[in-house]
Length: 463
Ligand code: C2O
Ligand code: CU
Ligand code: CU
Image (cartoon, rainbow, N blue to C red; front, side, top):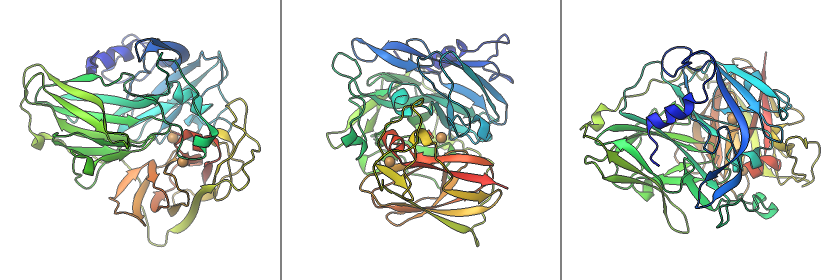
C-alpha cells in the first residue's frame, strides 16, 4: 500500500489523545501524544510475523511530528512483558528525558509509564527507540521516526519519511536467531529481509513533477547502507538532522553512494518524475548485488517544479565552536581487554559477554557505564579524537550534544554537525563539540551488538 503524507498523519492522529484535535496543525499539536509499546504481528512477508514490537497495533510505529521550539509531551506506556524506555536519538533535550536506564531514569517496568517532556531546539529528522534490551527491542521493530518541523514551512510538495530496517525472518516470516556471538564480535548480525516502512520494496506515491523531501532513517542494528537513486536529480538537504553547509552532490550513481550507517538520517530533495506512472528507484549497494529498497511513483497532475525551487534549510541554533586552544580528548575504540562481563543489568538484557571497549573499558549493556570516560566543563569547546583501531566499522553516537566533523586520517570530510559519525575500520576522525548541555551523556556504537558487548561509555558535562 502506498504511503502518503495523509496516511502518516491519519496514523498519527489515532495516537493523539486528550484535548480535542490535539491536532496536527497549530500549537499544542504535540501535547497529549501517547506511545504504547506492545507486542503485535504484521504482514512483512506473505505470512504475518508474530512477536513484533511496536508503538502501534499491527503496524510500524508512528511518525511523530513535533515543532522546533515548541514543548512536546509524550506519555509512554509499557504494555510489553519486559522493561523498556524511550530515547530521542539526536534531539538535544534535557538529560532527565534521555531515556537511558540507570543513567537518566529507571527502566519502565511492564504496566508502568513515563512522561517525556522536552522542547526540541533543532528542526530535522530524528528517531525514537528503546534504550533497554535495545538489541532485541530494536530488532523486533520498536522504533520510529520523529520529525521536528522548521518553525517556518520550507514549502515542499511532499514530505516522505522512510524508515529503513532489515528484519531477521525465515521464509515463513518468523524471527530467526537474532544474534550470534561470532557476528557480535565482528561486523554484527545482518537481517534477512530488507524493508522500507516495514514493506518489502514498496512503491511510495509522490506528486508528479513535485519537489519531494525524502527523509531516510537508517534504524537498522547492523547494516551500513550505501544509497543511490539512478537518474534522479536533487540535492542533499540535511544529514543527521542538521542542514548541510556545502552543496552536496546528489547520490545518483553507485560511485557517489551516500553512506548511511545505523542511527543516521539523510534528508534529500528529489524532483519527482515529470509524468504520472513513472518511478525512481532507491538502491542500496551490496557485495551480493545491489538491491532496490523502494520506488518513488509519480501520481496526479504534474506540478512542473524546478530544482531551483529547492529551499535552503535554516541552520539549527548550535553554540559556535571555539577551537583555538580547545582541549583535546582521546578515545580509542577497540577490543575488550578481558572479554568477561562485570556489572550490567538483567532487567535490560545483559549479554554476559564483552568483545569491545572504549579506552580499554568495556561498559555494561545498554550504556550504563560505571563512571564517565571524561568530564567536560559546561560551555567549553573540545576536540575529540575518535580512533577506531579495529577491523570493523563503528557508527559512534553521542547523546545530548551535537558534534562537528573536522578531519579524518583516511578521507576528505565535509564540515557537518551530527550526532552519529561512521568510523571506518582503522580510521581516526577528529570532531569538535561545545559542552553546552549539562548531564551524563552516553556515547556508544550504534551497531547494537557492539554497544551491548562493551562499546559504550559516557561523557559528563557539568559546571
Ligand atoms: Cu540511538 Cu544511545 O541511541
Ligand atoms: Cu541517541
Ligand atoms: Cu561498532
